[in-house]
Length: 326
Image (tube, rainbow, N blue to C red):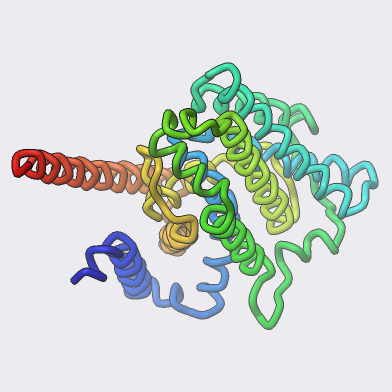
């Protein structure tokens, strides 16, 4: 019982995930085929990579609304560089550098000018979305080098490269949050910023780091998505912003800040990918899929907030009882 209470939310998440896969298989038998499940993981990899960065922004009580625009923009950066004869490594590094710079700008606005995160990232997202259209007059880039397309579509031992990249990014997020001092500071910032300030820790650096991490992850997700689609389009990152937030929320990242595990966002991403895959196999339109994902986010956030309120009430009652006994 103690084990269940301690890991209740994660166990529920795993049970829901298993149930979803069997329900999906009952409606669409082809869903449970190995080839399709590998495809689900491959499609979910972009969501999971973006969610690694998004999760840390949410942990510090922020939100990154530039992720969708950054994914599209960094994909277009790769496209325009390839169109001008730039090599694959240089194009990828340029896209990643672009994401880091965008994250630096967002983080600086939040850390030094006290601009709310949703405002600063919303503006950056709008700018990158507009710039994506300007790159090629709203048209797509294609004819990518084979070496680049292989990143998103080749396999190793029958498993797509995308799956390995997803695991690498999740492992990176876990190491940052559990093995490095800044990970403790990130959760501390989400729990009580004033405590860190009183301890002499420069919270501005933490905020900038978190937003740069989100920009880095969004850029890598944009590069991977462009490689998977073998093209770059100004709007191809639109749905991934909502899906990344959904992956974080479903994975147990508390929207109130200070709580959540990075690896759980991968499970959330896989669940979102599975839902979209089942709906696609059932020939449900993308627009209706977005409605369903939105409803899932609202339901999970409402549930998590209800649990938090009840937990806070129990803590308050326990504290009051202890004070009365004294």
